[in-house]
Length: 132
Image 1 (cartoon, rainbow, N blue to C red):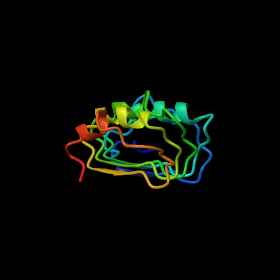
Image 2 (image 1 turned 135 degrees about the horizontal axis):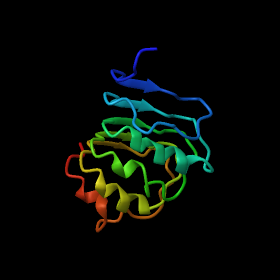
Image 3 (image 1 turned 45 degrees about the vertical axis):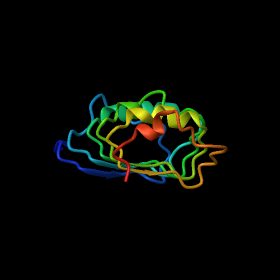
Image 4 (image 1 turned 90 degrees about the vertical axis):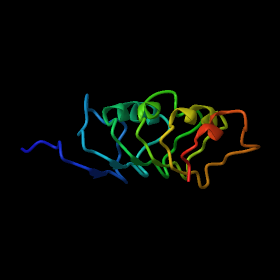
């Protein structure tokens, strides 16, 4: 079997995945699709396992059952992330504080995330100077 070191795009949507087991993922992986794959119970493990892919620039996590604070681990280590789609998840306003670590982010999609109230202007969201 050939090494997956040159893999740049991986689509795993619609599967029953609760964790990606890899101490170090393919170094060239830039785009990962994980739409409609998890439930709230397993989302923490799945997001922690994303650390194995530090060179991701595009991450699709739409239509999962992520709730509340999902950025405590895993996603915050993705310093090269430029595109993040979290549509159709249930997020709370703590998301805006956690996202400040993603300074490379250019595109952020939050359609139907059930956010409520005001976007906090004193938290990390407005530190994202590269958002387009």
